[in-house]
Length: 447
Image (cartoon, rainbow, N blue to C red):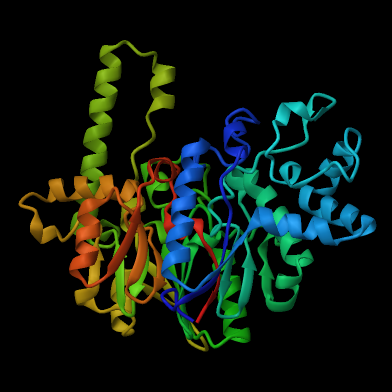
């Protein structure tokens, strides 16, 4: 099983009315700023869906349609149970004070009704699920079976997603027949994992990002499970910026908003061929990256001081500088090999090359090759710009064919120069929501 094998089945979630309510409910209860907004996002998602439909044999499932299928087929007693599980028992009982079981429908489950329309004792009981369009996050299929995600403290506002999807997997006959759940992390205290951090490489290897959304303990637990219950022999744990396991409480810095998941900066596009953000792994480029962040932050503070911005507002408006430790650990790799001692590698890409899972001449850089630039600062600036708009976050339909946003011209040219067929669509709304095509698709089957 590889992330570049032909796509056969995929689960998607169309952005709907819930994206209009997120900013109003609990300061962004559906996932903060990282959600696609409004009709434009819905239109972009439709274009994405059509690219999958026209260029692959994949069967496409939609969360909304699956819920409607379930509600149409279950009896009254089963309906009560399904509603209780998908809404959460406490919220379901509160909603029953306002609506009957027959009146509660898919729009209530997905938060597509205005949250302030349904309140009990001044409490919002319907929470928008605005980030569910990033379907890769709520669960992921590994070589050993399906893994259900667990959202950590700051991201706990997305837990409604796992309630909904667990109920869908349990109650829909398609998934009852064909899905094997290897692990449900949502039931594991202090084991946090999100699907965007998980990338199957081949039958015997998988890469998992470890940072602020997926904890090291969760990776260790999943590695142990995969070693026991699948053919996986090697698990690469890739280090991302983290404040999750920090010994002291930390304020997120710019690295946390860029290096979100593993799939935000690294994806295979063909056998032994990948697109990635090179400053993640190269020491000389890491230092230039920090210098650019430091300089732009300094200029921003300087301008705000000119405008006599209050110190308290200044502190809130500028994120802290990444520490040298943040930069140093970025892209490092811990390798869990079945029956062997854990290894620590300075560079995830080199670890893949050493294991013959990546060709060193087929590492495609976001922003193009550094050799194409006379000034390394210009190169890093270009990388950051295209990285921010998800240039590496591509969805493979099969080996050598991927879907990407069309805004990142330099990276698209680099992919094509390496023989990759790139299918593009314009997505200014989706790309601004800190997710890309790979994030939009919960891959169910590749073969």
